[in-house]
Image (tube, rainbow, N blue to C red; front, top):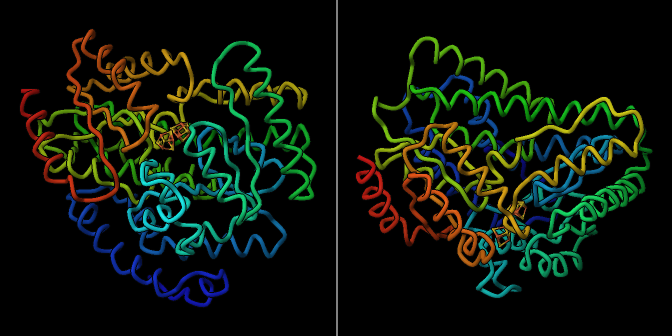
Length: 423
Ligand code: SF4
Ligand code: SF4
């Protein structure tokens, strides 16, 4: 990593402990990513971002803050980026995906909390992630119980706004979500000092829609029989989309999609013919959680789609553009975000429909339904997912894991057996 020592010191980070993280990340990335062959050239951009993950983008954010812009840290795909962008704010994802942060989270949370929450709290309290130090305000949501309680702890350390997510999708829940978004808009206006107007919101909607469309183009390329890109590379692209400037993200994803479309025309694949096609469904994989994808793709299979929040739930469906009033725009935003099917909703049959649809669209041979340990929501819903897939004749393997490597060998054995069973 380049030298950002002074910046990290200014952010009040625990330099000594942070050095330990910087020491292991390049090896983990090298082993997982750089060992792949024939990667698309456009992946250079994401490799460069990871190489300086705690440097380049944090430095950019600080420069923007010096110009008066505010940074909002978010933890969930339900928080509407458009609203922040319309007030000239910046969104940065804050979900923790490394075991490195878990012990600091466990110092204040029960061990029986999902690793994503423990890592996110640990990254802040342990002072080892610049993004968690830079954000002017955190935006939480009432999705799962673990997160709701985590916000109380984080809220003592950093300004926090919590969006009250509906748990059902009745018409009155849509109305409530519109109101919640409007309230969030007021908070954003107050912190940024900028008024959200219809035109500014329209522009923001277009920017975020363009980013979604660009990511979708990359996903479309994975529907090809000859896979032009690995699942690991797409996962990396999506993970970094949560941090990046949305317009640059769209440009880079479109550049990658151009290359992938050319590869499809040229019949270039990164996997041997006959490699089994796997869809991963379930809980999100925040950066640098590459564990499951790496095991799958070194066990004779390829990941062709992720039905997760670091996958299709992040980019599918657009906010309707061209509304004439702010009121209509907020409703259009609410409708798009309420279309995401997270297990925190009941009933949540839309997610089962999504999984079956995606399995068919991406022509998968099997689904690996993954659950982060102690995520009660996705664990419980796993049974319905399994039943529905079986009814549709799609093989499924349910897996529960965390961020440690302690179960890696066991997972590999199970996944290899599953891939072999696919014939
Ligand atoms: S799984 Fe649910 S709570 Fe977690 S990021 Fe996705 S939508 Fe939000
Ligand atoms: S994985 Fe489950 S428990 Fe963890 S933050 Fe997401 S919804 Fe909550």
